[in-house]
Amino acid sequence: MKTVLEELETYNNNVRLSKKTLSNYNYLLKKFISYLSDEMNTKAKDIYLDKVILLKDSSGQPLKYIPINSLIIDNYFLFLKDKSYYVLKDNYKALMSFFRFLENNYFFENPMIHIKFQLKDYLPEKKFAKVLTRGNILKLLNSIVTHSNDLMTDILLFTLLISTGCRISEILNLKCEDIDFENDTFLLIKTKTKHQRMIFLRTGMGHEIQKYALKSNRKASDYLFIKDSKKKYTRNDVDILLKKYLQLANLPSINIHGLRHTFATLMADQGSPIDIIRQLLGHESLITTKEYIHPHYVRNKNFHIPNNELIFDYLKKKL
Image 1 (cartoon, one colour):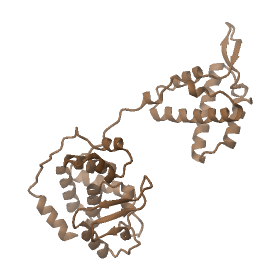
Image 2: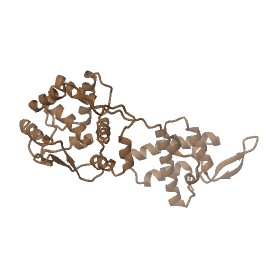
Image 3: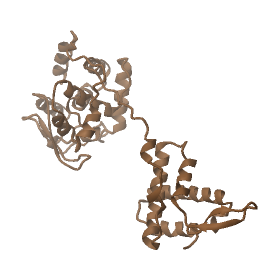
Image 4: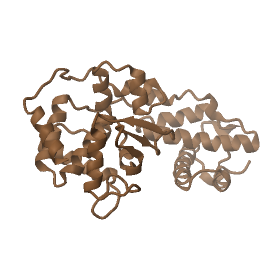
């Protein structure tokens, strides 16, 4: 075999990876080679992966050479153990990619196959996304009504997110021609799972969206939500709006994806079967859907606010 640096150059020139991924892997592999250099007290240019020093005598002279093995890789991950899960994950993927390349080209035994290091042992504790209670949803809507500079757009945007459970990208990619105003449905063409999905709206909401589209002079081929500059709304635009209205309503911070969790949790509260919720969210796995439902979250199933009907009546007139 060539030296490890020469092997790395061959790897860089032949492996099929995106430019960004290859650059990241190359950086991490050089870090690994630097570690080997320090451990072996040998210059990186003199290291051969099929001849790694295992034993030295009292004077520091090598007694035995062996090919790099799983023990050396495990020691490297032990060296990295205080790094974050994502750093460990990137290092694991970089090393696996490199040694698979060597294995395929030289029949070199892949030391990654036998390592004791388990990436799953370093998984960070999953943090539950916050969800809004029914009362908080009303407070959010009231905040939009009170402070919005574009009430029709903002109230429709957040109502769709909360009442459909759609991903923000799905709503922002929605075009007027995708909406069946009469039957209160719309078809999602571009989805994360690459599968089209039919979304069912609240009764009468199709007509409200149609009124909005007409007032906003939207053509059939236009995105439903576009700015004055005629550009499509971005996730960052919506993020800024949500943060603004939550702060003005003195509500706890929640990200856009939390609205999707809110939809799933409220659907479960109403007794909807989890498989129905899965289909509405566009998930392929029930396990994923279960993670979106927050049974531990304090909610108010029969929560009523006297202003409730006043708010909705006001919104109907505005829309």
